[in-house]
Length: 266
Image (cartoon, rainbow, N blue to C red; front, side, top):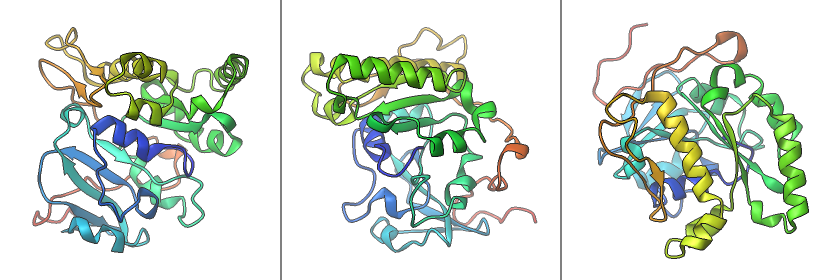
């Protein structure tokens, strides 16, 4: 999650090692997109909870007013451990807040992207306040485009301020230069300098908190320069949590169905 143009789609690219959407489709045009492991066809859920197949090349035709969720699949290692939901920007002037509010009820944790040069704006804080009680301990704050802060003094100042203003609201704060990380596949030093190592460690801790078992607690879960999160042992299966209805303005969406399944009870 995060504001418009905060690096969310670049983060998804980093996590799964590919751009999950067709070239002519940008995430800013779409309602929330849920990515799961596999090769099954894509489908959409409309605002009434009904599902139907959809061709990937037709995603750009979908209206956020009529579609509450798009489900697509990819064979990326991290998707063996958890699903990812690519959210539209909370400040996108072309979308109402209900577009992303409908999907956050599905989340067990959030990776919030905030542009480092203007990190943690009041608009971000106001939205996160609705969800911090339920999701804070399993969520990360990413300060994206951290390389745009040129001096060490500026970086330290921004980190100090953001830590003060978000104390207790996130499990960890991770400065990162996402484009540097994408370009650093064959350069371990640059990969580490981008902040990807620190983010990988924090992500591992969140995944363990969400679903670690005795069988896989010591297995490695690392974000590596191949842009994948790998693991051994049993997959991490995030626990289901109950949405705090008192802190949200929209009802939790129905559990999405596969096309052809019986409709949910009224």
